Image (cartoon, rainbow, N blue to C red):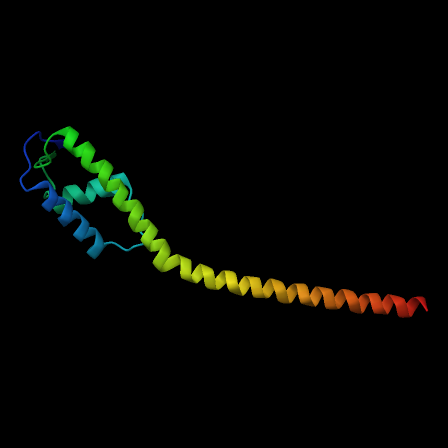
Length: 126
């Protein structure tokens, strides 16, 4: 577990956040779930430059880190929503349409078979 060095930001916070968001958009598959652990790991390694002797430099105070991490969790959920919209919903809609058509066809065959059996029973009873 790395420690957080209590020092000021090396870069402006907005610039760091923009770099983080850019890295996520460019390098992660949209299907990857953004967990707090993953966002912290990416933040430490790609934005602030990793650890040096177990210390993460350039993160500011612990309050700033907690506030930033809570806002980063929202990034994961919105990218997940975009992934659902773009990747999963369209194929799911197609699959739902196919399954609905298959169900209707199955129901049509069942009714036809039931009518045929009913006619056969009536002929046998005569």
